Amino acid sequence: MKRTTLGGSDVEVSEICLGTMTFGNQTDEAGACAQMDRAVDVGMTFFDTAEMYPVNPVRRETIGVTEQIVGRWLARPGNRDRVQIATKVTGPSQMLRDGQPYDGATVTACIDASLKRLQTDHIDLYQLHWPVRGTWAFRQSWSYAAKPGKQQALDHMADVLRAVQAAQKAGKIRAFGLSNETAWGLGRWCDVADSLNAPRVAAIQNEYSLLHRLYDTDLAEAAVQEDVTLLAFSPLAAGLLSGKYHGGAIPEGSRVAVDKATGGMGKLGGRLTDRAIAATQAYHALAAEHGWDPIHMAVAWQLTRPFRNVPIIGATDLAQLDHMIAGFGKTLPEDLAKAIDRLHRDHPLPY
Image (cartoon, rainbow, N blue to C red):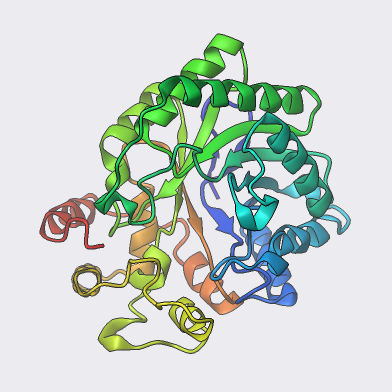
């Protein structure tokens, strides 16, 4: 598998990342370890996790379980040196830290806690899961209202960056990243880092897929100019682009089924809409017209984008992962990429 570097850091990773958010919930430990073994076998050496995982739903009693599973795999002889690990600090949370401030001291403590759960002495990429200011991510864009407080935000960034700088000097982390951030936030994090001679943002992990292309404009420009790599989560739109929810189907063990079984709405965080199903069917028809598997098309398309990005794929079982792996290395033809852009005009922001 091809390799890429995260932003201006020295962290080199595989061009596709394995997401782990189901490990400990939809995916048991044996299945999780089998996935990590298979990923490394095919050259996918970059794994992404977070202190709050597993998710869907997030429960106080399972927070940190995914990191623990990954940590037990990392502790096996030879595994740690073969992979690059990214994790995240959640931010303000009554569930995780009883509302403690999301400040530099919290970040320092959370780095140490993640290192312990991961059974490692360093984290390759440490990310802030959410901006303290709030965000338009996860369908909040429909009613998002930015709040004033520039100086407060800048002071928070400086405090956190000093903690990140100290952690990097201590060898605990190699690079720093953001998640669910905005263009303004990305720019200011870079500015404050420069003013402090602290680690610059190397990566930003935001949602990006055929069905969700909010990143394409201001954020993409900011990332290109600041030399920041996109880590694209939900490249299959939380499973929508697989087509498994067509016709109102809810496969056993799917994210929708698990959500409903635990009292949720079963709407994939607002993604499961009639317009999204229609768009997915259109992309499936386009893939068939060009002789492509729609899942392979969705992932390969990411690698054609005019900015550096690493799609984060996720699977609940080894069969799903193997299906995606079968498409690795396939290059999307230019005519299909152009057809996708035309189709996007007919199905913009379907959720």
